[in-house]
Length: 417
Image (tube, rainbow, N blue to C red; front, side, top):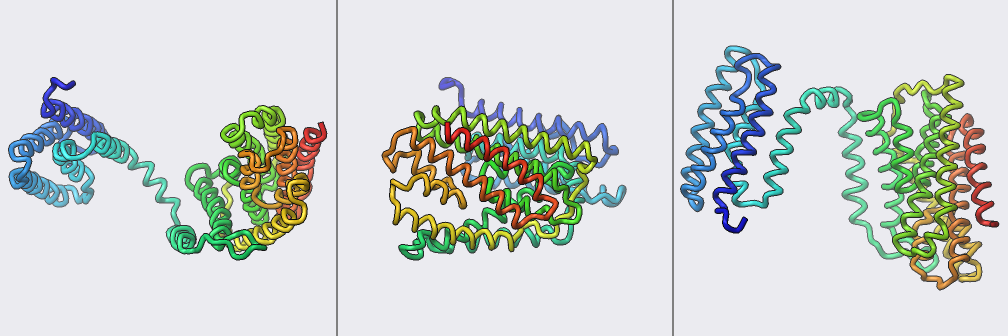
């Protein structure tokens, strides 16, 4: 490659990229009426090569290149004017693609190659996504961007401005941590709403459970429980999604253990994998039971509050209360009360506590660390059940109690054994 001139390599790149864009435009000629598009493969190749020639003639003085671009703009303007006059069509996508093709040469010379490849990829993909984007935009309503603006406000403006310093010695959380809990709840709810509405309108609840469990199964349980009070909610579907979030939680904790403590991870592999598989089985049985009862019609649920802001504030309040309780337990019992502490921290986000266990901050044997980890996970499942019973509908209580009871009972077996 060192013996190949750079100009020749860039020439080939311009040729290939222009040809690819032109071939993609050729496809539209087979579908659209003749005269609605400006050129195809050969036209784009020649335009790309023209941009290459006019750029390398005077790379330090872009007047010649700009002049060629203005000439192309004049021809495009005439074409667009006649297109409006003869066919009453106003789309300019093909015209913009022509200008992008002409601009390939300076982009390849001045910027890293990955940027040129990314640009061509975006052009090829988005010119083919016209029908998909039409269908996607048809699902937007008048409040969609207002909801997005609200989420950007709480996550992108308020959160970064809050201080990270803890409030006091008895309450080891900062305003940033408290508001982060609000953002997490709202974010999971909003992500689940977007996935359900735009990608999987008939299976969005299940996707929310799976994705939410990879970040915070507790927050996901809160959101799903709140969702059960909707008029069109399927409680068995919501219960099944909650069990899936718990199944993903066990796998997530196992991955974190392997990252920080291999010896502890091997000790926890059988319990966590078994509990994850059991949670998936429970989720599947609940889903199957719902289908037999013909309650699982999977129709699209209309969600009035995608951000679940009130639920997020309540969860943040509980987060502060339980953080205070955790701090008091640590002060009075220390390392000797690790089992008690493991149970207590299960009522909130257990990840920070478990990370301290995995990194060896307590200096305890693997057996004790393994037991403490299982206790924390079991306690967390118990508090998730309490959250769901408190925030969910009455119809949600029975299947949730049954599902979580099976998982908690199996967890206790692993703790005892």
